[in-house]
Image 1 (cartoon, protein in one colour):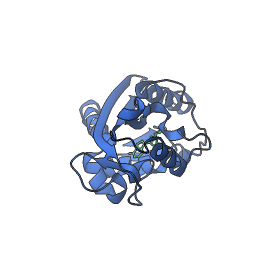
Image 2 (cartoon, rainbow, N blue to C red):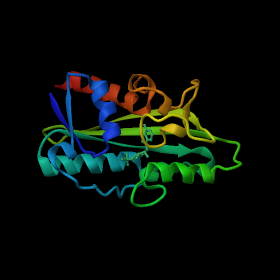
Image 3 (cartoon, rainbow, N blue to C red):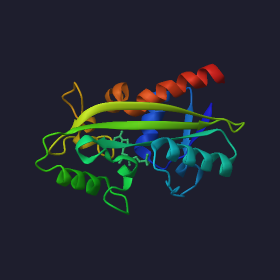
Length: 193
Ligand code: IMP
């Protein structure tokens, strides 16, 4: 089975392909020559996920899915949230996003945060479904590790001693917000295809 993933994010694509193994082949927008940065104008993860999946379905007329995700930091009233990718402005930069977050949290004791994902799937008949995942953790005072993407070097999942960026794909894939949502999505695909 082949599925279009409505994203150009290579880190996310690798995690999803790893999780699905050989049973499902993921093509992202770059793989099909689409360089569009789909505007994310909704104010919820679910809204943006649906918007990106609809873009894929309407433009390429195939079953497709998208993932909208982000980091919510308790002491910052759940910012950056849906603005996680462009927290420090455009062009998007993981390094500048992390630096801005560390700056905002200087001297702040409550470092609680969580990652959330909503996956939106539109089947070949145009029916939409969604799947959610969440993981709690804390924001460190400095970056650790070089794997992964986004805020991984400063996110320590609750109950673990390694940041997401110190984990390999298999380790992150056992516990991440995206993998929780993907497991729900995968069971849905098995039942419905
Ligand atoms: P999206 O493309 O709008 O869903 O952007 C999500 C943004 O949230 C990414 O660009 C990252 O900055 C952040 N993010 C989402 N998931 C993760 C993750 O697993 N690790 C680190 N950062 C993430």
